[in-house]
Image (cartoon, rainbow, N blue to C red):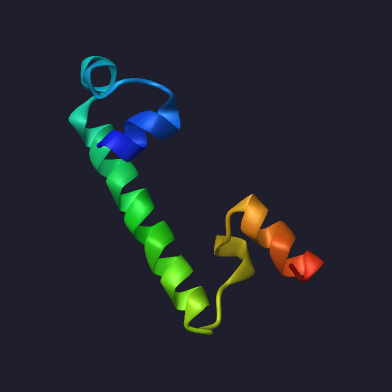
Amino acid sequence: MFQLAENLGMTVYEMGQKMPMSEVNQWFEFYALKAEREKKAERGGSVNLLDLEPEALAKAFSGE
């Protein structure tokens, strides 16, 4: 919850007042999928470039 609030630039209290729980749950799913992709990439597994975040996609083509 705290990481999401920080990423959105609000407090947990504000987030609770402004965001329905269904959206919070969708954010948690997003972060879980993102972490899964990052772990797979760290292990050297193949990653679908279309699934990457823009920053990661840029790194893939820049060789960083």
